[in-house]
Length: 507
Image 1 (tube, rainbow, N blue to C red):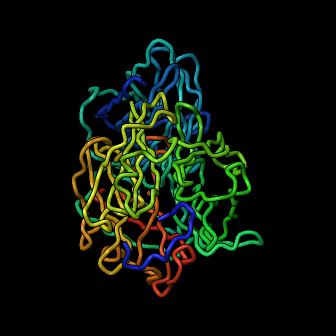
Image 2: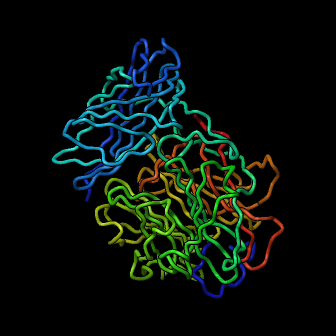
Image 3: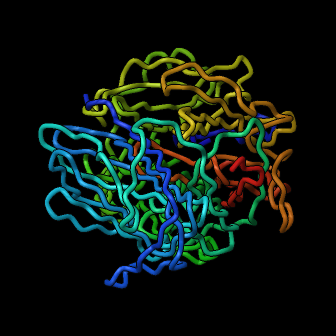
């Protein structure tokens, strides 16, 4: 979508290192017993006779020399809890250095994580998630046991656990009840074989000023962090592209949020487009990945500070040979980074039927990307066009790939695939125009259809880090659409941002 700026013919509507991660699931079968109110007032039990029963999933998402990042999911199998504390003891003296979506106290090896205001309630059958960065020396074993509100949690390490039921996802205009890491969705479950969605109206529109005559806002990336949605997007106008940042605590506030134009920051002016944002835990830095004619990135220790981004740096010295050999009349666009416990991968598209993948080690990131291969291709360039996203599916042991395609009517929609590994082969899942991941055939518009295109966007994730983890439950996808009657120069099309909410969740 986002072309390196040069004279571009109008697009016709029909045109086309680190130690491995460690995971522990603790299955906890608890008998009913009284839940005592804590004397500190931090706990407010829903009932003095509430039965506590829970399951804890503690996962080391990534680990590097002297540091690690962990995710903790607490599934409530008993009565509803209003106010929670989860306690455990580290087995090798690990220390928490940063925590999100909880607060914590630590005395020696003993840790207690406590809810924050927005996630105090865990409904019966629901779950809550938080994450943290920590330090280790010598070894980094998984904690042997956990206690929820003072009740010991014991079980069999590694035993499978049933999928919990998550609390309902808010509508695009309601106040979110975020789960503790990135998203108000969360929970367990599996991906369905087909998808249905409901769309909001256009939530985010351009805000031109004296130096930004913007026609469209597009290509969004989003994370939910510290009680806010943080959105980065491309700004499009006849003269080219750049980037914008906005943040808000509720989708109903998205339209009134202040727009910070990143050409006024060290990111600079010139062609920048199609951003992706994530927190790279090993370095404790936010990364903003975007295209400049090359695959580029900037870093920032504080996602909420628009002026904190570094000047652009490139992942490659130039276009990899395999892309040059296959790009034809297409464009090298839409860079996307995702990491597992050992490696980081950079995907990109060429508007010519090819999806490419490069690789480097987690320890070497952001340097050393090579071994560029074709990860997916189609002889019909419209079927594998651009705007790929790759995500780790929470609790499903699979990765989800979605790619934007151009349908027979010229309208944009998404196809999807799954794989057991990022570097593995991809199996189609909701991958046709008649049964897409998301398109005009499976998206409804309760407020009235404002677009026929479901185009370049980003999932609201459950984790903000480089694993790009999403829940398969009640998914939400921020996307670009436009007035069906609009046309003309591609760079001047009136793109706006809307939110899809999944309506056929399996959990």
